[in-house]
Length: 118
View 1 (tube, rainbow, N blue to C red):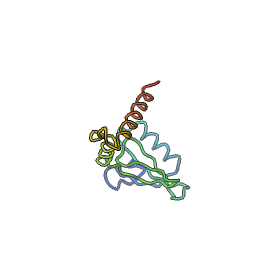
View 2 (cartoon, helix red, strand yellow; view 1 turned 90 degrees about the horizontal axis):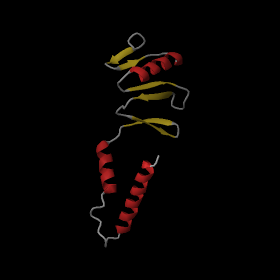
View 3 (cartoon, rainbow, N blue to C red; view 1 turned 180 degrees about the horizontal axis):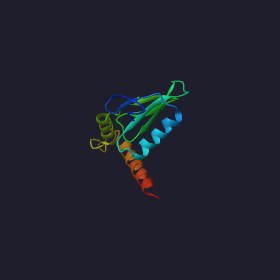
View 4 (tube, one colour; view 1 turned 180 degrees about the vertical axis):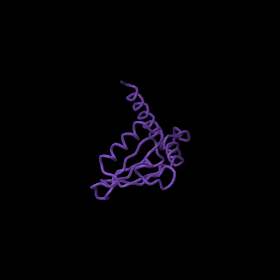
């Protein structure tokens, strides 16, 4: 990479290359590298650039009606949301939410069965 690009800091490269060279570099990265990579490049989009991602980077590429944005997942928040959605331990039979408890348990069971079917 150092032959084609300037290394701004370890692992961060900047270069002005054509699409053919860019695609060959990306093919090599995606086939041979065992690390994560994100490539930003000039493109004929509204934003003027495109994004490629390889591996499991800490940022996720989100497409909002053609607008590419980077999102950093908040694993702590996601875990709390899953727990709050699935925690029905405090719902009693006389609670107004008891019907919801049954409904969500049935839905969860049916989704699990669908996932198990080949």
